Amino acid sequence: MTTDDHALARDLATEAGQLLLDLRAQGFQAPDTDIDLLRKTGDRQSHEFLADRLAITRPGDAVLSEEGIDGTARLSADRVWIVDPLDGTREFGEEGRSDWAVHVALWERGELTAGAVALPAQGKTLSTLEPPSREAASAPASSPLRLVVSRTRASQLVKDVAAALGAELVPCGSAGAKTATVIAGETDVYLHSGGFYEWDSAAPVAVARAAGFRTSRIDGADLAYNREDPLLPDILVCRPAIADLLLDAIRETTHAN
Image (cartoon, rainbow, N blue to C red; front, side, top):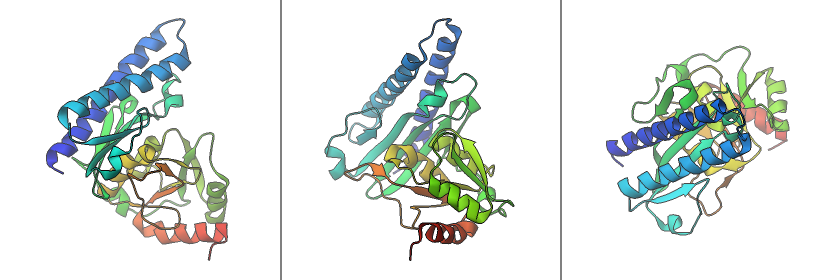
């Protein structure tokens, strides 16, 4: 991994985000836009853009994309780009929503080494090239704690942990947008137990780690990427100082020993 990989992740996420912004603007300007088609077109065009650019700039690397065909070659590859061309497809199709993202991450020999999360409708890209300030990661937690959750699919575990800690639930859209609120200090915790995929979290986790945040499974185990089954059951992203508090609350809530 080189500085060029950090820059490539940032540039690809940002440029794909701009493509999506342009597509979205054109769609909402049309009086008879098919929103479902707009969402599908966004997924496809962003995927094609990222896949084409990676094929040109990193022809020897494997790619795992939400919108691509997942083969077995990546399992023996030393370098794998893990991308989500449009994280938050539902939010992308709702005019005025800004909580959707583009994810680009690089996995190398067992580790995430570069990543970028573009938040196009918010006009910013968070990346490992220029990691966000660590101030939010080291700042005191808010009181009450703020847990960022899905607007529509907050799991019972998350609700139970929030109740046990007297925490406030803050609804937000995509996984990348949720993690970005933690990195920015707008929330304290991203806790998810409903299952999602490697492309949903790889880039956000890479950036969160670079910014000094704790990232793990909800039992404290390390997050692993480029596995045969890309399904990830859960994730915890939080300030290091409150990690033990949260892990204890999760154990108590799930009656784990």
